[in-house]
Length: 82
Image 1 (cartoon, helix red, strand yellow):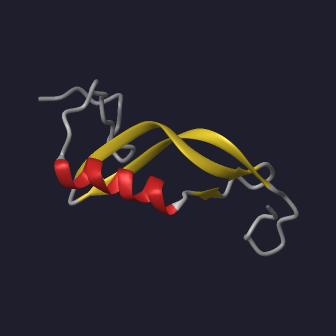
Image 2: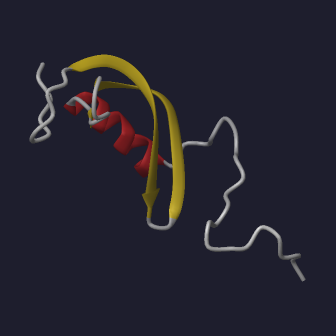
């Protein structure tokens, strides 16, 4: 399928992506999400069933299989914490 982004001549291909979202200040990362990704610009499309499954992760607040550190780009990594 041709890309929906104006001016892009790319086409979508099926891939699995790492999807990150912020739900009420809670950062969630979901791996292996099926998507259509443009080969040129990287635009990502999810089908309706995938969106429903992502919403379940948010609404049910499933226990994560892992946790990751979260860094704030606006904080100076050279400053020592007090």
